[in-house]
Amino acid sequence: MARKNTPFRPPASKAPGRPKRGDAGSAPARPAEGQRPGAGKPSAVEADTVETAAAEPAASSGGDRLQKYLADQGVGSRRDIETRIAAGQVSVNGETAVLGQRVQPGDVVRIGGRGYKVQANTRLPRVLIYHKPEGEISSREDAKGRPTVFEHLPRIRGGKWVAVGRLDINSCGLMILTSSGDLANLLMHPRFEVEREYAVRTLGQLDSLQAGKLLKGVELEDGTARFASVLDAGGEGSNHWYRVVIREGRKREVRRMFEAIGLMVSRLMRVRFGPVELPSHLKRGALHEVSPEEVAKLMHWAGLPAEMPVPVQKRPGAARKPRTVLQKLPDAPPAGRSKAEPARPRTKQAAAQARGERPAKANGMPASPKAARPRAPRRGSAR
Image (cartoon, helix red, strand yellow):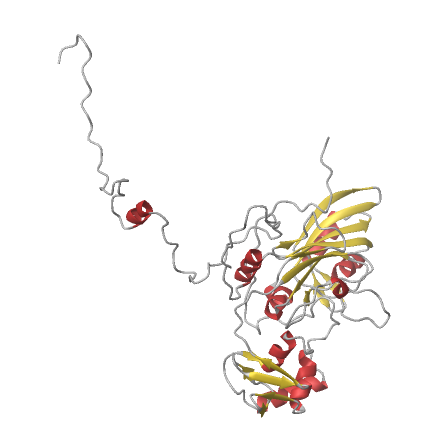
């Protein structure tokens, strides 16, 4: 029986490369997926904040900015925290904080009657994979009372969940949520061009001219948009499936691109975001937490500081090894070892070979090459 070609089984592909870390000013930043066009422009409050931050020098050159640290602790958004800092409602080590100030491990930050002691960031962040169904929104709160993806997430201590790329209420598929703002920013920001792969069902088929337009670029109201690749995934009747890859995430961008060439999208499902794929075993509305080993690989792929956690010996009968959800990525450097330091040989023979010496025998004597023994003459033959 022939294997049915479905868009939910991604084709074999090589592991994606690291995100491109170009100059911050080399390309204009487009709004992230779910943002309105022009969201990158500062508002009146933000402009005032930027001017004040430029006028007041930072208290120190290292560490995280104060508003970023408090946002990672779940106090509020960076914009709200900047407003409270400007109003003098935040203190660091007993002194009123200023905009642009950075905090170091050991500092004590107080805001709204609560205190936070800055700890060294040595722990790996948490990463969740959620199979979002249709009918849920990607925002934390909704005035209309619609269900959100954040209602299904476990509580996180000393931080908050950040959604990596939004999906509209009529779309489904892979959603990544993490406690690391740096990882989320690197995956989402258009400057790094991290790939997003979607399974798209359309009413009708693409012809070669329409496919060429999608690859070259179509004009939308917020700029030109193009796919990195378009793959025909088959279909029956008027419904046809395609696998498309895009390197940015503007609001409803995939749907608008197909509408611009005259095709209506009847279903949209995200199946991959960078090196993270939607696991085939993950049902709709289900969560999967990525193992620390794979989180370390993801941080290493993103170029963020992280060390491979020390493996723990499991007792017989313990839970089986969690399923992998990442494409083949290089391992993160083990704990306590730098990237440039080679692995140590595990046996004495391997160590001797690495030094250029002859490996030793089991009795400790160096192994000598065997001398060629003369072959005994055959019976009846002359010597």
